[in-house]
Length: 292
Image (cartoon, rainbow, N blue to C red; front, side, top):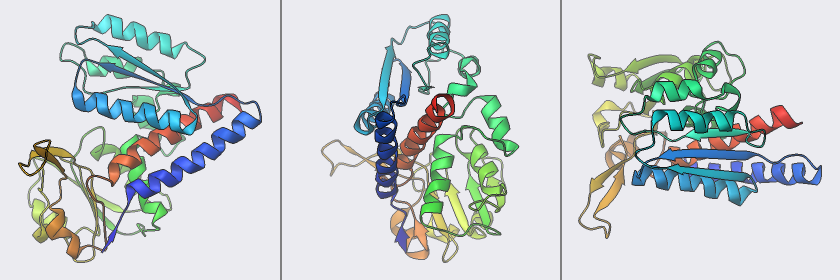
């Protein structure tokens, strides 16, 4: 068993991006500028956005954090998005999800300029991805593919099972893993809440990607000997031994599953850092497209 160390690979990518920033500065070119909008006081979202901002600043990117109150109206949010769409200094931006219940997330995502959609959620980018055209790829799925590529894990002809069909992870992940690409070309099965024979499907997987948000759902009996296991889940679970009163758990029962795998991601330190790295890569792509 070998750990797929997302923290290590993410740091390597950040070093590569920092070199690009320094090169752009030396040539008098614009450096990437990432903006983030967060609405409300969700603690986890705030922590996540702040980590993105810090990563930007560490690399020499410019970064703008826009914090809006919980009672911000949908029209006010859409006006702010329109401002970012028309701001030539902003290369890319994200609208942190989830949004307060009174705001229509679909309307918000549709309002984002696809050319600045570094989260890769706009239907235009999703459609281009599905057709194999250049596009901003969703950060978590593309981060997983990048992790597989950095460890040179063979994917062509392999059976890939994805647990979960969300628009953020499961659906785009299935498209990326089956596309004609050096780290694609899998035979993909997506398992979800209405699927039958879930255990049997997982047992067939050469590559198992768990993204359902259910702690310890994937048990040892569900994993084939020698499989590659990617754990996207991250949930707070009670732990009285911790000062905080909780610990972070993935969708995979790591303690019992790891011994059967060839490669596995830890939680934390696996997929999470790769998501941020992918966002930073997308933002560099955005500035390179417009300012070279």
